[in-house]
Length: 301
Image 1 (spheres, rainbow, N blue to C red):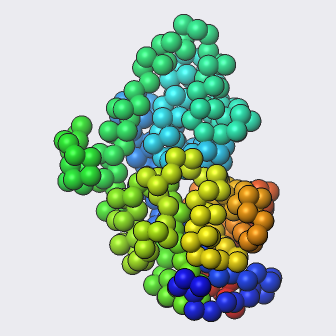
Image 2 (spheres, helix red, strand yellow):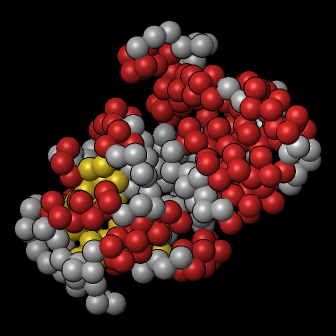
Image 3 (cartoon, rainbow, N blue to C red):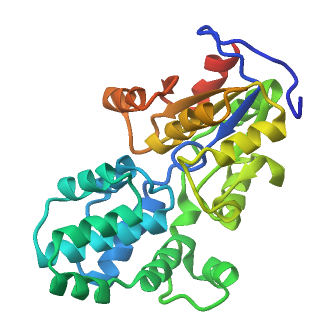
């Protein structure tokens, strides 16, 4: 078994020989980095925005593991709401009912607005400008020039440098001593590298999937089932902070019945407390933990 030194059985009976980790909200706290960049990018371009807590509404609607898509959808909401008022809760509920994601957000805006207002919204919806603002805010000027290959639209220090680490080194040691460890994230590869260096987790390229490695994104099961194959794992635990992370494991179980897949919700992202546990359970989570640091006890003791 690749990187797996021992098989273990949890008190609830899971035999975990591979553990796959999300990054944002699991290994690093991104409330004041990625989510702040979402809110402030929209504010910079349009003079109004959503509340930071409302980013979770898009996450819960599904299909928004890429925070550029969240930014685009938040901007689309702001522009549509200016033309014809609609509560954000209704806007995101309609997105969820259409299957989630940016395409669904566009469909909701088209359904909500008349032709003239929709044309005006589409004309004002500057996705390239939003992406540039987001990357400048998140990366800061120096990293923007290094990774984006050009000058940023404005000079900033970058929120990426102040993301609190959530995972303890002892946790990483315990996971890697007992199972194969992989990473499945919506981050671009370069930003995933920065994050993994920051937390002190070394993962071979073949044992991770980033935004650059596939187009579908979570909750599509391809990345998780591919990692399971590469690990030759019998049972895979996938820990993430969003409903789409858990749905990825549920979908992997349906797509690959030859293996066991378990989704574990981590309550250090946008979903917290008992309401978070209930939300994770509702989409098929095998367990929910207060922190990634609870995984070794859950899986190996």
